[in-house]
Image 1 (cartoon, rainbow, N blue to C red):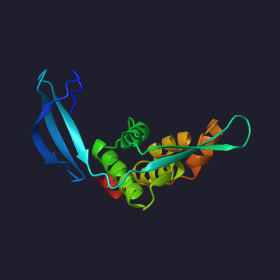
Image 2 (cartoon, one colour):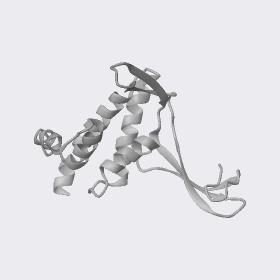
Image 3 (cartoon, rainbow, N blue to C red):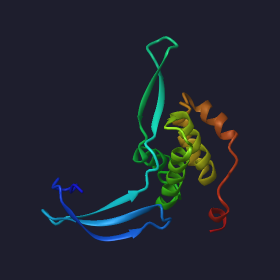
Image 4 (cartoon, rainbow, N blue to C red):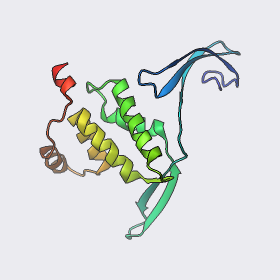
Length: 167
């Protein structure tokens, strides 16, 4: 494993243990060159999944399809951004992302539409935090003005999980 500090190609594993939800192995590593310590996570990848994105070409209605590999970290960043400054733990975000990744990989198709991933995120955030849900929707559904927020927010029921209300 390449050291993130000095880019040396060799490191030693000092400690390995499963994550709390047992979906990954957390490894503490030490660079054999500079001695820096860092953490890596090893996860099961069931299949290579490609995300199919579509975007309008120029000013016409023609659509261009683009494909790129599913990127768990990109998904995690999007969810974390929606949950920023909200009372949502990193573990809960990781659970949501792991659940979405598992659904995508076990769907039986090597291609998944980006819109499907967006809907899975929306469904998950709706259950976790209504503000994060609205934040994500504002980007995902491309809100243009305050009225878009108002209309969407008026359809959102507080859907916080019971443990958040009573915990």
